Image 1 (cartoon, rainbow, N blue to C red):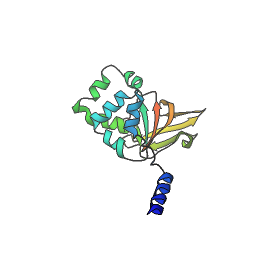
Image 2 (spheres, rainbow, N blue to C red; image 1 turned 180 degrees about the vertical axis):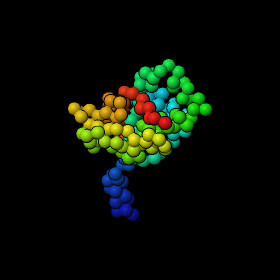
Image 3 (cartoon, one colour; image 1 turned 135 degrees about the vertical axis):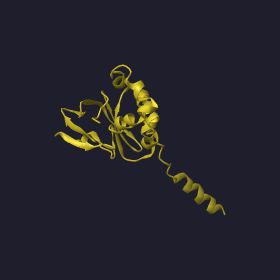
Image 4 (cartoon, rainbow, N blue to C red; image 1 turned 90 degrees about the vertical axis):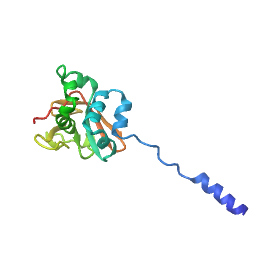
Length: 162
């Protein structure tokens, strides 16, 4: 009996702790504090659950300042229930269905398909001079890791053609 207890005590000491919980994309963006508008829009569009649970995503995330730079009244209009389809189209245009670290973005302009359902569905990405661009936006902070993907912070809201 003593041998069994000793063995159990030794094994308990060798136990490998479980990895710490990593936050999903929505939690990571929420914790950053600079994506309040993006999170509110994702919730209004019904996309927050997708961003929290679907794996291996890349989100080109506009900051609150990027949303504030849109023409006055744009964000408020998009958040109305009658404009949900347009909001979904705009937000899904910021999401790629695979994780793409900045180092893997090509140096030549390349089209990458987003989760937008119809119309203009691809963004143009390019890595040059130590930075990354996405359509007409500049990545101001790259490779923020979440347990289900990567966030690249951008300085503008991407507006697809409809």
